Length: 294
Image 1 (cartoon, rainbow, N blue to C red):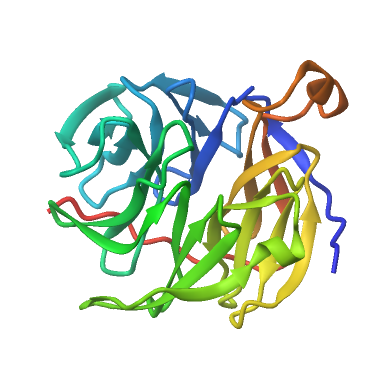
Image 2 (cartoon, rainbow, N blue to C red):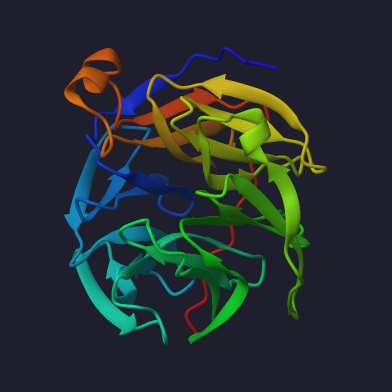
């Protein structure tokens, strides 16, 4: 079950809360965020060049759009980001969201809709829920009453969407179509498999298997479409947050990590924590749809 693949720290980002990793096919770069440092990173695997832009607030995710800029989820709403100028422009707030909440993770579906979650910034109240951004309109869609949301993730055909209840140690799945989303049901109870770890950001591969980072788990885990654990890949950091498939053949796995809950002793034991990692994926991903702003 454990796959010992060659994992490399490709960028020493020193992230307090690295998240939201994804591959931008058009620009051939990896985007990811450091939520707590308000940083939006890009990394070019061909050259190793990298830099970050300072967001005006905590930033949970950034997704390329069909129109050109990136659509970003910040603490106080949705923004666009222009990579050429480094400018963030506020698009809208999220109606009904408490001021103590922030946005955390997101994905697109084949129709260009963006699915994202909110959560209590203090990670104490079950005030988080999921939303969909559909060509300029934001509406609640999916589970609610969650303390720490992660995902969603959508399969290539757009027939399934996966939601993560991180604190509850559960991954959920619902049917998806162009018309909307069905009722979420249990996909995997990770408390039984990883009692001391928590499922974080998910992603689906080209074989319809679901991968998730394991916070406090030092690995990423792969689940079959029926929710059976089939593999783990150890990562040389403790708090693993999210994985994405990238590279020209979508055959490289990129993984973000966090340090915000690590002590000096923890960091001494795992000095690569907070890095962006990469390893040759045993299966490829699929091209993610770009978001549609309108």
